[in-house]
Image (tube, rainbow over all chains, first blue to last red; front, top):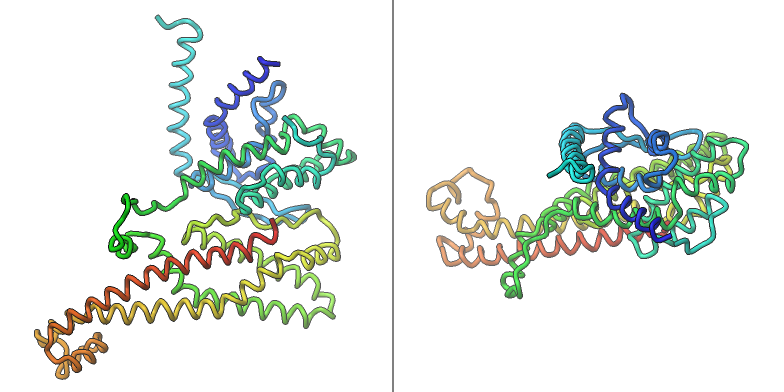
Length: 120
Length: 313
């Protein structure tokens, strides 16, 4: 039980920056606007098995990204239920995605070097 | 970790989520409930034939429990607040009263509030007309079959406008307002929807706010323009005297921009002393106006919060 708690905490700490990176990437790659549920489903496909994060936690991150101008959103009324908020990446979002992607690769390589034991 | 038993219905989930977010800003709570309801209803719709309880059990571990989702919102809110805040004026340790009084000119909120006060004449008229036309048409058409959906559309429009007004107030005064519209609730027939809208206190307080915006807007606009013109004209008195010395204004000139300056000029003659005196009063009036503007900005934001957001929380 102790290990599981430790593992979950470490995962949460890692997620705090990376979920935002993944959300930007999903929206950048998609040719059309996506709404919250669609985005969650796309992530779920890759997130099967040992889930890396809970889907409910991506919504506040989407709001943050919108609030800081990296995404825009619009509301579309829907007849089959509640109105949906569709998200789209902005030019600023694309630039930030590039930057964060670079940082992520650097960090990943750096950590691997030590964890894999290839560092002196 | 779970304070409550697992929710067996969407309403129960939302109730637990609201409880888990207790103490947070009502606008944040509204946003969180909206997102959760959107996801859960979509998930239920994607599993036809399964009950809500079954679907909730299915997604319990992948979507997150109410308190996990609440924690995510609390954590992000801190970051969003920091990103959106207009920079507060730099605080000086124990400012002297003079600095506190005149320091208002360094406060961005005072300027944005003053701008808002000028704007509210237009928005107040707009909102008032919207409500009056909407309500009277709804009442008039009520006997026809089109009356019912018309009323729904009218309330829907007021909700969207209320959201827009909230965003404007947040930008002007920093008071956190909802970023999502009010959720229409579970899909139902026309009757159920109308019933829900009519029994929601927030529908009525929103209409009250729109109606109040007309007298308030007129008041704010008058305060702002009177303050600006009196303060501005008095403060420009030395310029008026100088202008007369240069032959630009006065009884003989055709330059009418400083009409009030002309008037005072006639009262004071060529007196520089009087001009300095008027300048001091003018600056004082302007500073007072800025303080009043900031106070009105804060007070109005609280009113908007009370009428547009809190009844629904």
